[in-house]
Amino acid sequence: MSRFANLRRISSLDPVADHEEIMRISAGLEFPWDYQKSLELALFRTYCVPSISGLLERTGEFERRPQKRYDDTAVLMAELVEHGYDSPRGREALRVVNRQHGRYPISNDDMLYVLSTFVFDPIDWLLRYGWRPLTVSEQLAAFHFYRAVGCRMGIRSIPSDFGAFRAFKEAYEAEHFVFASSNRRIGQYTLDLFCSWYPSALSPFVSRAVVGMLDPRMVRAFGFSAPGAWVGAAGRLALRVRALVVRHMPVRRALKLTRARNRTYPGYPDGYRPSDLGAISSTRPDR
Image 1 (cartoon, rainbow, N blue to C red):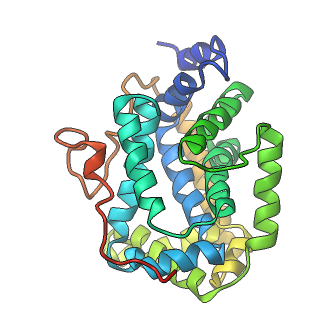
Image 2: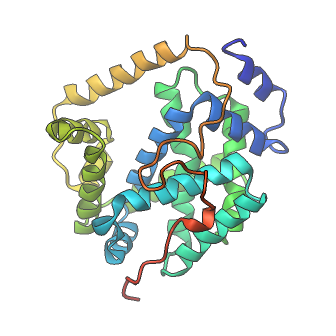
């Protein structure tokens, strides 16, 4: 198969009517690693909002079991993309997501902002570091996909226009990205999680590399010390070199969504249902 076979398939589809199929091809076949990494940083980005980081701090989940929380989020989102949000497994995954969110006093605007990062952070990542950028059809499909997911999560006032949703995201960050001690603590727990995926001797280098990839507003909101400019430059160069290599690799034929590696549910999805994820903790935040 040609390296651009999937792109030709995407080009034949309608970004509104066929947004689930386009998302499945883009996230599961064309860019599985890039979607994973961009969504890791997308979630990291949301912790720059004190109301979000403060709630996460009160739950205690990031302090006690950050890997499980990360895997629950990643796998539940993968279920929606792989099987569709209205499929039996998709509806089951959404019930888990809604049950978890329903336990806490989360504002609609915070939910809407987190949803916006799932649309736009992968678009921005792939523009910079993908072996090709997302096409307009892929961008619109992501918008319509997550808009449908958001509606099924009960999120209100989701913009019906792609540009308006982008404008909401940018305005929300401009207003709400401010330093808070909870940002710093949740950010550090997340950095520690990222470092735990590599040999301990590499932890200082991994931590500096991650912070070096953050934009200055995020660094300030977390209260992190920015490493030398060369750290971020080296990371960005490495990602662009990777993109050149990936561009000449064979086209992927098997989906890498729910079968992407996770550390909490070995062998997933074999032997698991979405309802096995997101087990309820006894800890509740103060209301």
